[in-house]
Image (cartoon, rainbow, N blue to C red; front, side, top):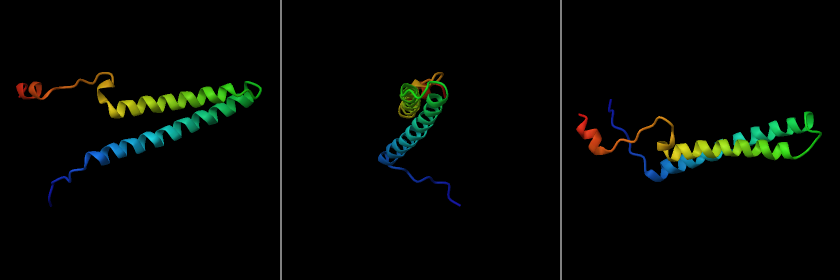
Length: 90
């Protein structure tokens, strides 16, 4: 059994990240929209601002998650190590 891994082109990796970001945006904005509709009907006498606010919160959360997937250095506690530091530690 061979343990070699197939190399994946960078375009495919970026495409997968964009696909995940879009799916995350649709889910989180949809959940925010639903929560906003419920809050609007129950608490705010059918005003529209809770719907827009909660949809924006969902989209903002998706944006932050997408930003972290494209730039892992922005994750708190993550340290970027250069090749020279990695070689000198061995």
